[in-house]
Length: 206
Image (cartoon, rainbow, N blue to C red; front, side, top):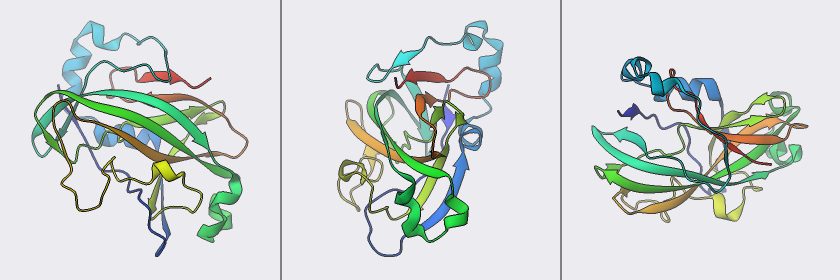
């Protein structure tokens, strides 16, 4: 059954007008992507069973993503996590807001494997991180930090702005988004929410 998706990030290279819009908690991202179909999952005993722990590079089972009343099936594969440094946030000129924080970039390989072609399918909307001290928060930026990795500057995996963003069966992309975590924490899991009533998928980073 489809999960409603909400565009929760905008991350692409832009040197001018760098503004930190804020951070959205992983719990909030989970809430925005769940739909009324969760009730049917709750009625299914198998839906409440916790999935086994995966490792980075291992693909998920097909996940349904809906946008503009079109539903496609996507295989989600987190591939790596790049951790930044607290000083990366200095250019935002909000030292009190980001004190004790650092940015991590999560990379996901996504492949459309079935269902409808979906325009602007936000495959990262349900992706989150967990650290040894608790969950991280999705980091929303207009523009990009100068420390953003060069291979993490694409919007939803689209190579050029203005390109029609339609995912078709067989298409695959590498997508990357930033998250905020405590400066001293280490990311140990990447997660993918499957709704309120189903345990999230988890990939071990270590």
